Amino acid sequence: MSVLRAVLLAGSQNAWLRDRAMHYRFVRRSVSRFMPGETLDAALDAARGLQQRGASTVLTHLGENISEPAEAEAVTAHYLDVLDRIEAGHLDGQISIKPTQLGLDLDVGTCFRHLMRLVDRASAVGNFVWIDMESTKYVDLTLELFRRARRASPRVGVCLQAYLRRSAVDLESLLPLGPAVRLVKGAYREPPSLAFPDKKDVDENFFELASRLLDDDAQRAGATVAIGTHDGRLIDRLRRRIEAAGVDPSRAADLRRPGGYEFEMLFGIQPRLQARLVEQRQPLRVLISYGEFWFPWYMRRLAERPANVWFVARSMFAR
Ligand SMILES: Cc1cc2nc3c(=O)[nH]c(=O)nc-3n(C[C@H](O)[C@H](O)[C@H](O)COP(=O)(O)OP(=O)(O)OC[C@H]3O[C@@H](n4cnc5c(N)ncnc54)[C@H](O)[C@@H]3O)c2cc1C
Image (tube, rainbow, N blue to C red; front, side, top):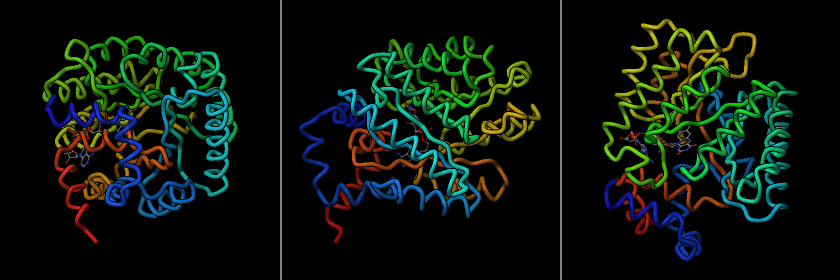
């Protein structure tokens, strides 16, 4: 891990820095590159625009590690409203939640109850809930939440991180469930004993994990893979693999025909690559983040690409 990345990821957990950075106008201006706005209305507007351009969306209300039961309750109520607003707006939009935002740090039972309220509502309106993967401390609990929820409903998927050495084993353990898995490289600060420190190993593991989900037996079991990356080379390599395997686009929300794949990217990142995939009739879902609690999430976006730090520095002097 580069020094800059390590510093930015350490900074993402620093409350002093957060309280100051969130008030600087130049920081807020640079955040807007990755976020259409802080409100749900802004996110829904952006989702509508993307849908007109041929992409589906997944909405996530920023926040993590809540410390009060009432906060978890409020987050759940918010997402129930999001599911209703998506339905009312006829949007092909899903939701993505963080377990610690639903109270995982408080207790697993409460978090599971909140998760199931969302999964039940998603099932009732024909939608879908994604569970994000946070730092390694939460992986076992998150997978357990997913397993329990998946036994109750197929309208839930989970994220796995290719930088983690354990992910291949975790994936094998999930396959009998015919899971919907969003594969990403991983965005947290993890030690080399747990996560591959070299990018080329992470990329290779990503390819292997995605390939496993595209294998015949996994597809027959109903596995769906959401390929969550902006890495053009990896995407091209996986498209060749998809074509060779004859796998169809994903229908994570269409349970009549489970299995398949889709690409997922973050709002504002690699827009030309996003447009190219849509032009080539590849299924693309764009994750739109919104909300006031954007600091740790934004620091992870900066850490992903050192050039972003120069972008922030330049915005300091922009009018
Ligand atoms: C839909 C979705 C959901 C995600 N959910 C999770 C999650 O639950 N848990 C988790 O740990 N991580 C999550 N991530 C983040 C992920 O782990 C990576 O940190 C992030 O996607 C960057 O990695 P990459 O695959 O794009 O590859 P990289 O090799 O990092 O980037 C490939 C190229 O994409 C561009 N790029 C990548 N990131 C940026 C950026 N921030 N700004 C500008 N350009 C950039 C650059 O051109 C770069 O060369 C998610 C990502 C996506 C797309």
